[in-house]
Image (tube, rainbow, N blue to C red; front, side):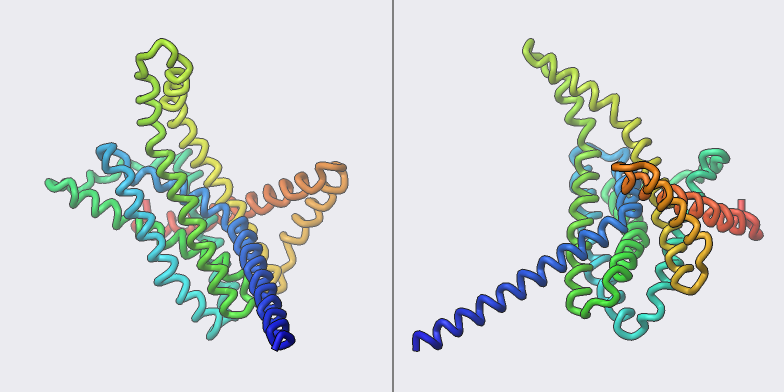
Length: 312
C-alpha cells in the first residue's frame, strides 16, 4: 500500500512539474508576444487619455474603468475566439492578415507625421449633449471602437508568435497577453489622467515643511503636457518600427528577401563593430531600418488615400 501511495505521489509530482513547465512556457511566450506588440501598446496608452479630457475629475477614473472593461470584452469575447478559429481553420491567412495590420500601423504613423507638417482643418463641431452621461457614453463607445482596432493588432501579433503551439497554449498565451496588456495600458492611463490632480493637491499643501511636496506638485502639473507629447511621439515611432518590421518579416516569409535582408546585414555589421554594446546597437539599427521602411510604406498609403476622389 505504501508503495502504491509513493507511486501516486510520484505521478502527482510529475504532473505538477509538467504543469509548472507549461505555465513557464506560457508566461515566456506571453512576455515575448507582449514585447512584439510594444508599438501598439505605447500608442494605445498615448491615445486613451484624450477620451477623458474635459470631464469632471470625479468621472475620469470611472470612464477609464468603462473603457478598460470594453477593451477586455473586445479581446476575450470577440478577438480571442476569432483568432483561435483562424488558427484552426485557416492558418495560411495569419501572415497576410498580420501584414495588413502592420501596413495599417505604418499608415497610422505616417498619417500622424503628415498632420505635423500639414494639419487637418478643424473638424466640425461635435454634437451637443444636454445629458452629460449621454456624452460620457458616446465617448466611451468611441474609445472602445478605437480599442477594437488596436486590440486586434495586439492579438494578431500574439497569435503569429504562437501559431505553431497547441491550440490550448495559444488560447492561454493570448488570454494572458489580453489581461496583462489591458491592465498595463489602462493602469498607466489612470495614473496619467490623475497626475495633474495629484500635482495640484501637492502644490496647494500649506504646511511649512511641505515645500518639497509643492515643488513636486508644480513639476507634475507643468510636466504632464510635454510628457504626453513625448509619449505620443514615442508611440508614433514605435508604430512605424513594429509595423515596418511586421511587413518586412511577412515579405521574407513569401520569398521577398529585400530590403529585410539588407537591414539585417547592416544591423549585424553595426553589432560586430560596437563591442560590448553590440546587441543594443544591432537592435537599434534594425529598428531604425524597419522604421524607415515603415515611413516609406505608410507615406505611399497616405498619398494613395489622399489622391482618391473626395479626399482632403
